[in-house]
Image (cartoon, rainbow, N blue to C red; front, side, top):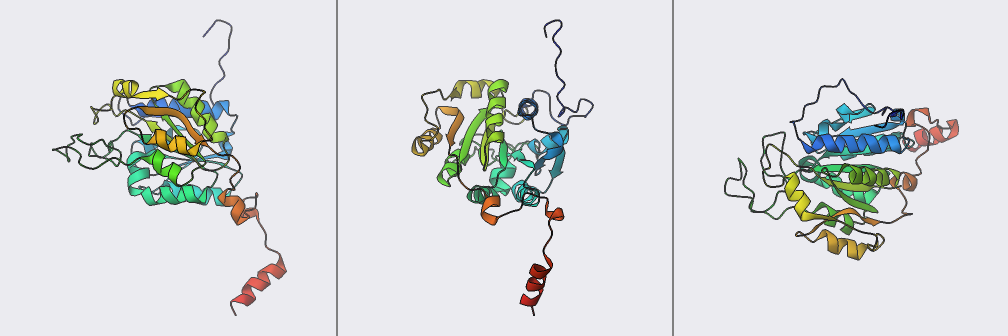
Length: 289
């Protein structure tokens, strides 16, 4: 920092919080990118809720100075939806790992996209179950050996971007934990987008995944440039299906789709502050007689 230039403190920081991740874990860099994006987006930490499931990535909300809900394994998205419907005025982020979101939570992932609530979905994709000591996850590559898959993974990996695009997700992006500034920018775009935004983030697990390292991701990824048309869904699907050259950046965005809250006619006020007129309440009571 240059002399005389004062650095603004990030209100989302929790400097005294003890961290539960291994040294060198990609989660640290994703956390820094998220807090930077939240701060630079001008979001009030009191108006933010971060929801997660279970896993190493799911610890993220515990390290952000904001409202948080840590739920069941694979159940971050329905909890996030409940928060958004009860308080449509809040900024809601659902953040967890590839096992939690794409494995145990796979069905919720599909229907969260269909509903299109105004929620930012961030998935730490390290292609392994890091919390439970390194067995294959839905995104593990064919041939990868683990303590459980001792002869190598046999199944084709789940492709979250292709699935999201095929279901009509209006904002689909991929980032890399190794590139802090670019990832922060992608997060800012996702947070500003109205509707469900899906960001899959490559996140090296330095202990249990010796295949997909920082070096491996650097060698196998590239950034989409200005020639990429983010409104071309067909092109985005084609790019998402390329398993050799893995694209980073915003693959697709489609503005203007109605959100789930709008379709339901959800009131902007908090659910607990809404009042039902006496005649309307009586009509509801009479309908059950």
